[in-house]
Length: 447
Image (tube, rainbow, N blue to C red):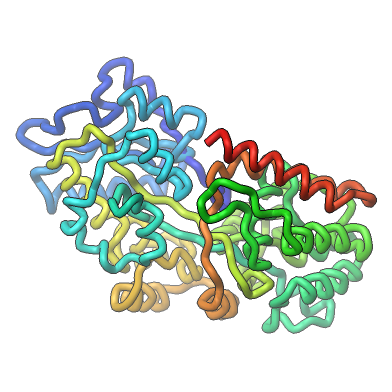
């Protein structure tokens, strides 16, 4: 799942009724002697600043590459899971199209992705990208996509509440035992203050169960993707910890079946001590929920063994011509993959437009490219970067794990287990684990 719920879908489908080729990659890629590519995930008109950045970057790309014509489709969210497969199968997908990390193998399995392996050497930035992110789009040794962003889960916490509770805000909890102890002290402040919040509805509880299991060193499914691996002490520890914080410590509040917006509202209003999220939650807490950058910090996932990573990238239509693939790779380099430049990396431009600069992620590059990107980011930072230092340092020691296959179906199953322990004091954890394990096995068996 995307950590902020930032998902986009095509909102200009009416154009398809006039010209099918304008909505997908089924054209021959030529327009007035130029190579023509369609791309998606352009910010909608309602996001005026982001839209202007995107349009400006396309204009500068076309100026540098006068033989390429880029037609962008605006969409919010960037991908609608309900129509994604149908667009692919119907030839209506853009030449260069947005995907979540968890989409990569599926798109390859249904034979709808262009093989980029013969062309990827022409993508200048490719060797500089983190290998673990590149590998997500590599299937059976062939490259089928290019990562654009990546995130990892951590523990967002309120420094002001830590101080009020007598805790050191520069020493956030590093184990689940410490999370529990700190949450209890924060909840003791009273006045509706909650020490720790977690999701337990709309598949988000299953998403967080997975992240917390990774943090304990466990897995949701086997490495071959064929069997559930949650009937373990680590998985029981996840549910037991949540149960005890809720019912023994009373540090999670009485309102349950929360989703991401609930936790963000609580944190932004200063009534929540901690919740799990990625750094991209922080600007939402400030700009939409009333929070303050100086009060918000992030630490690595407690437990010290692993964290869930996610993100997105672009894949190419199976019917794309070699010229379209080459043009699309050039466009990705220009828009997203040049350190300190482009739609996501132009930190100078972002700062001038009061966009947050200095958040610890996404961390896309390695080596000299990463050093350059971080240098430009640091020079233009307008948020308290010291509040994120613990997260950056701690993440280097964690195992980074992508979401499981059939993630949404599995999360739906795990939602039931998480919601049960948070709403029923006498929930049978062993039975919940056994039932969930059997259901996940059935999902995996169906393929």
